[in-house]
Length: 372
Image (tube, rainbow, N blue to C red; front, side, top):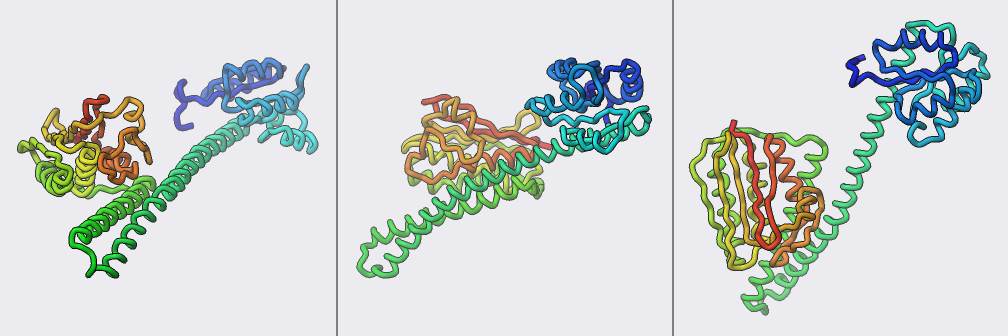
């Protein structure tokens, strides 16, 4: 066994009405396993409620309810139906063996006991049980990923169709009636096409990011980079959208040491936090963008003067496809994926992403990554 410390020893329940048999099996197994014993079927059913074994060695011939009936009762209970049962028998006739398998047993051991055989059969079935549990966990994980995929495809296809319909409709009008359309109307149509294209590209990028992250293939291209320069670059990118909403971007970016990071992925997180603040801020407000070195970590923050985030919404912020109570102030698009993706990218840098907020008092999103 890989780990036989008391806290990690698999638990085995031995059920036999003969004290000698119990003693022999205990001596064979006690070094590697945590043992409990019962001398009847009734006693075994009672013990399993508290001891919850990983495997049961069950004698067939016992007074009261025999081993077959005890196994039937164990398999009928939700808490114990999955437990592997190895029958102990002095009878190795074919009918008895078949009867044992019919009742739910996984194997049988004949008396008198062979030390090596008992250990081999017990260890084999414990390993099988462990593999079954791992497969069940993987199956649950795959079901969750499939549900996530279906949910994303449902939402993405609806949003993508809307974007593509807008691009097609406005571009068709421009191509057919461009001479008759006033310049102001043309500019509006081009603006609609630009916004729809931007939203469509964002959805495609997020779909690709989720695919990479959920498949466990997220890789970082680490190089010494200036986080200050990276933040300044993304402030300039978002300045256009802030100006359109009459939102002031105020930054405090002191000189700080370079840090090994993936500039594209950290830049994506920075862009997401700044653009989210713009989305949820009203005209005439200010967004404060900060950067500092603290406790051998680089800390980036974005503070807005928006509606704030309730405790309930904060609990689901970094989950996929979450729509919050607050809505973008100018009808901007939001897939509900950006923060979930950002958190994974920061975690890949051995950092953390978080938020502090109160309703009516704005929100501050911040992340920290190790300076090393």
